[in-house]
Image (cartoon, rainbow, N blue to C red; front, side, top):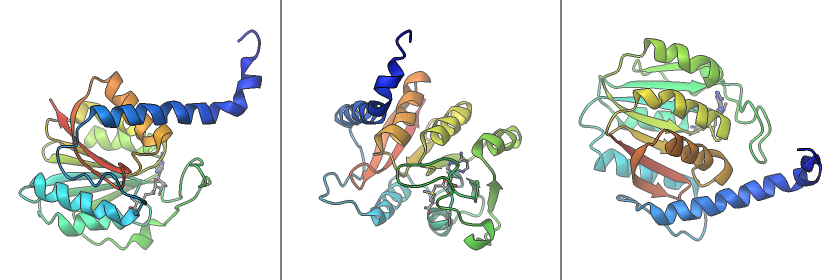
Amino acid sequence: MKWNLHRMADPLEGGLLNLAYMSKLSKWRQANVVTGYNDWYQQNWDYSRRIHLYESILQNEGLNKGPVDYMEFGVSSGASFRWWLQHQTNEASRFFGFDTFEGLPEAFGAFEKGAMAATLESIGVTDIRATFYKGLFQDTLLPFLDQYKRGNRKLIHMDADLFSATIFVLSQLYRFLNDGDIIMFDEFAVPTHEFRAFQIFADSFYIQYEVIAAANNYLFLAVKIKK
Ligand SMILES: C[S@@+](CC[C@H](N)C(=O)[O-])C[C@H]1O[C@@H](n2cnc3c(N)ncnc32)[C@H](O)[C@@H]1O
């Protein structure tokens, strides 16, 4: 600190952090067996492969056999939200969608602040099981959890891209997590964002989990909580 090290190190910081977390991700992959669907290794990335992951956990985890509480963090135009509404058909299920609906609150790689904005009205969801919460998770999640009635198995979908958003949500949901709850990630293979958030969360809260599915070279991942 005395020598203002940051003046020299600042330009290298992003690259070094990325390298460190790429290495941690590589180590993590070796240490964690995927017990269900896994398409590793693919020559190229294909975003549509996330549907294979959804289908596999829907089937293997019997997610249609009873009601679930589906919570999606990062709804944007609602593509994944609508998929789950259409495929998890239990009448007693509840679907909660959280987003600013004004786009990313900060830059994410090549995406600028405000990217991915879609209005709530444009999503076109009329299913009465769905409720949306507009605003920053940092503002909407705590009031939601204060009145949340526990019961159904939880299917949590982390699709906010950002480290800040992901670590905030996971740490607030911690005390609501039960054995068998599932957390899905949509950008897990981005080392300094969702992976970093999950690793810090799991290590700091001593979370036990099983990796139940991975798709698109680990970009999409699903873990099941063990308690
Ligand atoms: C990749 S998009 C979601 C894509 C969507 N799940 C789909 O399948 O089409 C990421 C979304 O996360 C939202 N987001 C990121 N950080 C947020 C935060 N802290 N609070 C609220 N929304 C956030 C952005 O507004 C953006 O719409």
